[in-house]
Image (cartoon, rainbow, N blue to C red):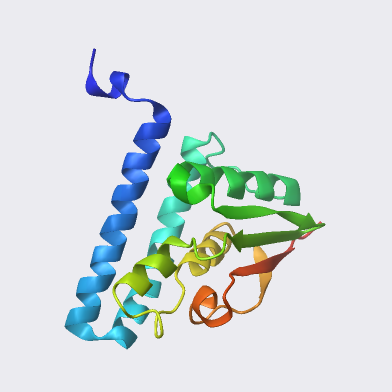
Length: 176
């Protein structure tokens, strides 16, 4: 029996997800030390934007929807939820709500103080200047899927830090 046969799928998901989050945080920290916060925020967003189409293609393939275009709100909602479930470690996913709040509207909300990026940036002492990459990643996913949307509130710096909470709505604009 091989190593992958001895490990549960959820354990593999958590191992890979936590590895990605740790790498992302260490990359951010060392880039910040080398280049400062403004360049690091800009590079982070550039990396997210270029990653999104590749990541979405891989997730669609893994979930069995490959080349299919997402054309309904229900299909988008299901895909986004499943994508987040597959990518995020369970310990992170369970603290992040992502659901349909009304017709063509998705709602996100982090449990108070539980966003992984908020905790990491606070820990390294740069939360005051950090620009959110978490919700930006979801926006880039939507763009990679060819989905038009609007977001409220517009995301800049960390909402959890500035307002004590992180939640908002994404209005999806579909050509029905």
